Image 1 (tube, rainbow, N blue to C red):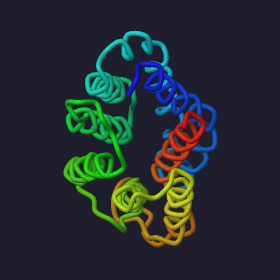
Image 2 (image 1 turned 120 degrees about the vertical axis):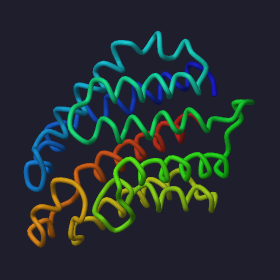
Image 3 (image 1 turned 60 degrees about the vertical axis):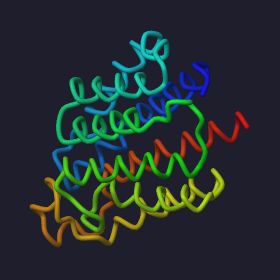
Image 4 (image 1 turned 180 degrees about the vertical axis):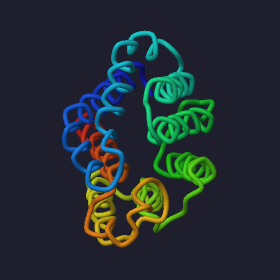
Length: 202
């Protein structure tokens, strides 16, 4: 992966999430603390502010730097979770910088396991894991970027009828049913943006 491509992916995903910050906050107001959009915006604005320094590093170290920024600058539950995701992807990055769908699938599988431990959650709990898991399976199956983007969207929508069993939303019990999980939405948005950018670059 070239520094230019990494910069494009980081900038594109950050700008996409920041643009949807109000919608993320609205989703979180329904079943959470109402701060997911605000927190993600703050963290990603810090990533953008330090983008030149971050992308001057090798990709593995750049992802770790993004992760640490998210941990330090994003409040709420999402900071540690997105930080764990980025740091683990950095740790799993191939030493030869050669990526394919299978390797990305392996990297995401390791990240999912790290998130399960960090968040003490599993699939079906109405969290970002419910988006990341089907995307990971799609990568291992060598699906196209267009297919993966659609899978991410469908997976986020599939959290609407779920009953939350982890996080603030779990306190609502059955009242969490009928609302999309904010973390699932932001995860899907990031994945869809990456897929779109990679399609444009290919």
